[in-house]
Length: 470
Ligand SMILES: [Zn+2]
Ligand SMILES: [Zn+2]
Image (cartoon, rainbow, N blue to C red; front, side):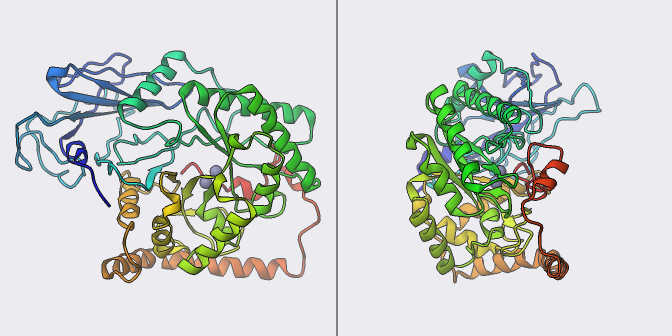
């Protein structure tokens, strides 16, 4: 892939400095003056450019009680430094071990909540496949992401404090500074509680209020895409449930200005809406403003719902089906996850890239689909160690332009596959056991009882295991 020269400038020179937890912390490092911004209702990253003569910028993230600060020192014009010299640690993380004389750590004032540190990794500037991770807890810049997801408020609570205007302004400025286009690169994930298919009036109002609040938050932040789970029929007629979703979308589009409501495909069958493309098609059909609706395809959900995307041929078939049934123009984002459960299991269990049943070849095929260029691709894989997402982003990017018979690729794919071998074996055995158990006693018709027992507004067992937040 072509890499513009500015990649070189973005690369290199990065330092990690932890600051004490405070609302107005100043560093003892004279090279950077920075402040920490408090964020309560929304995870927001702010980038502050220090005095120009210092030639530095700082990225500060505060989430809960954790403060992360990255200070990026830009190269001084005309000064060429050797690797490992002075403070020029390579920001791709390879030079993590190099000791810098000016690298300082300021410990948190309380040992109880030490700031988390991850190695900074440069973003691949100019790449057309925009991979990032879910959850802005990890600073997207630090992990080399070109897209990212976040929750706009607690995804498991109905009510959240209002967003401060100062936070919204800081977020919009940070996007500009970091060259993220919030209209295209950021894909917030809606609350898990929202079920727009809800028929109970009171519960439907609660769901809609939460939904519209999310959309309004998006617009205040300048975010153009909003991803959510279509919901559950709760055992009621499917066509009516889909119509209720579309009606809510039509109302929401009237009450907001530009944010696109993005339906996510789901893994579960039964009452869950969105495991098949027809559900998505039928919702979209009833949406009046077609520019305000889109689809996010989650690779784990696709596979669990029975769409095999493991080879070029099967991937092409699935995508051709999507194009025919839904329409490619509606595909606006992807969630990239391997699957811990076998094909058609209906189970929503995310696995790290290449380790699950999908395997690395599936992602090689996907990363070479030119039709996906420019779409935000968000990882929701389990974060085993702090560098997991940074490594997975680079792994996925490395697949662009790699042929399936590339020896290095084959070694990598085999290595990752071996890592998950035992887990896959156990999952296969569990599936077989489940199938035998299920066989004499077919699933009860409907499913209302199950949703009532869940205590929520219709989240079923399948939905409960959904792990988009990893
Ligand atoms: Zn999701
Ligand atoms: Zn997802």
